[in-house]
Length: 138
Image (spheres, helix red, strand yellow):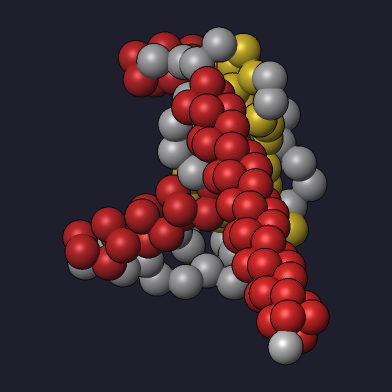
């Protein structure tokens, strides 16, 4: 008999929290998707798994190559950090604030660039005016 693996991933998919159950048996993977609604607490997820796992409808099996998972805790921590950086951490409001900060930063850059160019043009015009005055005065 071969090994069986199970994995549950809970993530935010606008506007609900979603759970993906992955089940791997004999190098075939089946998947089921569950919508939780509001952000579930750990005990709510655990309760859902205990009560409803047997009633889940999984997808047809798909061939998959099973890799031996690394048990090194540092490696697992690095992998978790990479996944968090890809998807981002924080609530919806924190993400909205970050977006606002980035927009403000772009605005400041454009305004600053325009001011620098205007100052350069003013300096250039002053030099040209001085040249003309010197030329006229002889």
